[in-house]
Length: 292
Image 1 (cartoon, rainbow, N blue to C red):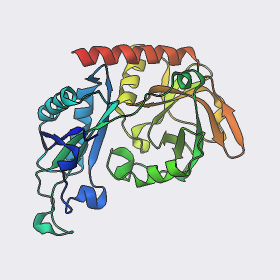
Image 2 (cartoon, helix red, strand yellow; image 1 turned 60 degrees about the horizontal axis):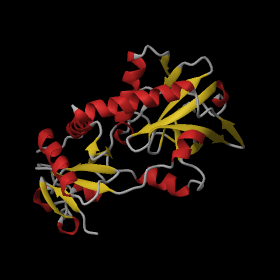
Image 3 (cartoon, rainbow, N blue to C red; image 1 turned 60 degrees about the vertical axis):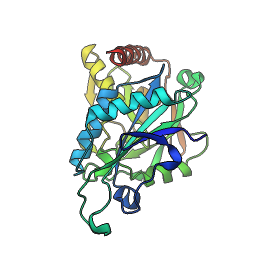
Image 4 (cartoon, rainbow, N blue to C red; image 1 turned 120 degrees about the vertical axis):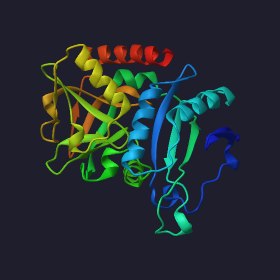
């Protein structure tokens, strides 16, 4: 089905929207994007996604950016045009055509931007009860010195390569830093719940993507005065945590049932009461912000 998309502010059939071959987003993966969950026909946490997207675009030096209000309005118009609501919307901004049609040309703008519907089934309910399986992955993160680690860019070849190599029973593969501390997954942020109930997650300064749902969870933790600290675990210290969970816009809060490290598998409690509390608060916050 040739569903409509938004291309530079216009709603077009997908097969008529074309990006220049001289766009660095196509040539080098030099683009930024965000992925927004759609629930009950509403884009969840839309202002937060727009703020992060535009901030990232500015930090990456993109010029001629669209107004946040224009992108938000186009998103709502697209949802009205689609015959059925998608699970997600992907908003992508690329630099536009290189000046002089040269591969070493300057990026003068205006940017090219698009909104694409992503049709995907929701995760089965049983995964939120049993938790998913993850592994300590094979790749050491380049850390905060690499913009791909701290910005949501279109250059995701490494993540796709890892996911294609993963065992089929795994949901996520976790990056670690040079000290062996686990940072995040290929598509998810990572949280721990320790034996004493303290919640822990790696700070962004270590080279962690500032996920939108991650930020909301951190706000909830602060507002509810839950015990928290910055940090993470290594493969050898995995048993120190009682529970663990992943976050992103698609999965929300997703419990981890086990993590595979070398020749052992560490089990975690997917029904921890703190997990249930955070999930409920995230749902309420999502509803409230979508209606405001």
